[in-house]
Length: 80
Image (cartoon, rainbow, N blue to C red; front, side):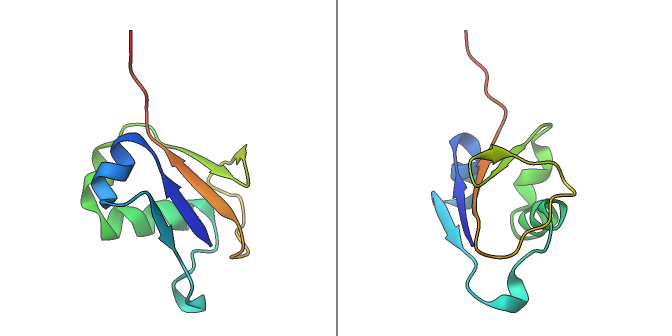
């Protein structure tokens, strides 16, 4: 499972990509992935909105993950 980070999410993690290769560490749902990210990187809890795309499609928290997906973590975007 490859997790790609953009914007401030990339800054929080300190990398643009994480790879979950061990079966025991792979989250089984989008909600579990979000929790795992907050547990590992507490700064994620400060983001008021966080979009997750699984295989290039936006996903809700209840989407099941099988471990072979490409996941994008997309933080809130501001601009003018």
